[in-house]
Length: 101
Length: 336
Image 1 (cartoon, rainbow over the protein chains, first blue to last red):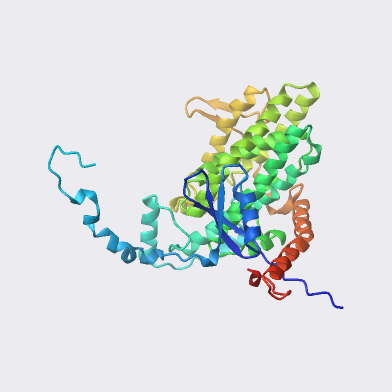
Image 2: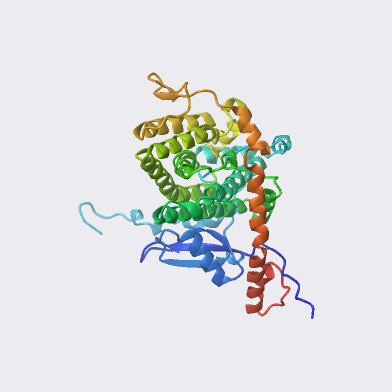
């Protein structure tokens, strides 16, 4: 029986790594790792980004699954948020001497 | 650890692409405002190329830098030293990894970069082409080589390219342990027997000048410095950083009673600098161009490690393919 063909030697798919450094803190992007699957991505992420014991939780996400806004569109894309001053507290006038907060 | 930022003849010959002047001006304005450049932002082709060169040389240096120190893991004098050295060498692998990943955000794959290293097309810091002859070398490497790396990387942590700067911040936090463990080894040896003190002095004698060379060619011989500074890829010149390292290190050497092997070394009260003698640039270029004591050995070791690890990569790929129910010869990315 022929031996199965050896799989191609590749660097494996890319995963983005998010780490949480304290209970209650947000997960933040830490970097990326290459791994064949999710389980190995978690292990590699632990070895690369969790060597000092600070990390308490890890997320790994296939890089290709991330959809990001384009820097070139940043102006028009975020504009609608910028022109609505009435969404900010300083838009509203309050009689002097009264504590509102 | 860090890479020597050396240009090859091919780098210098590559034609300067024509860029849109308006985009170029806006890019420069962003740099001047202190903004970070991120992977998807527009950037001049030359900025991208310089970064790929610098970052990949840096990543290769971390990986090759594991070899001279790994050489002493089995012969560390006690368990405490052995654990520290294993952790340090593992950190270097991690550092190489951070920077390879940062380089990948510029549109090159890690495979290409590793191939360049294995084929001998890539540069890495010349310092790793010197042999580690005694245990004192491990102490002196931590003290000098990691010390020089910290001086350089602390500055790179404010470089304009976001992924590079962020990798540097992560690395700097870890590098301080490297320097301290090295200096501790040296300080202990300096209080030891005559033989131990001689061993330490001998290691200092051999590593001092190559450590100064780590900062790269003198500014007068570094044609790209001006652009790199303007784009905030570099923030200080090679000579400025070298001087900073000397000023930091001389008092440390005095504190543990070792001599730095430079008869011209003297304190200049006006500039408040330790003035040092002439660096042997012929030696620097010889080592950079492949003729240091260990260049061939280092490349052979990397090639052997890569070849010996092929079955692990193949097995992991096959295992992932099997678990995903994909055909056995699914190859590379299909396994995901």
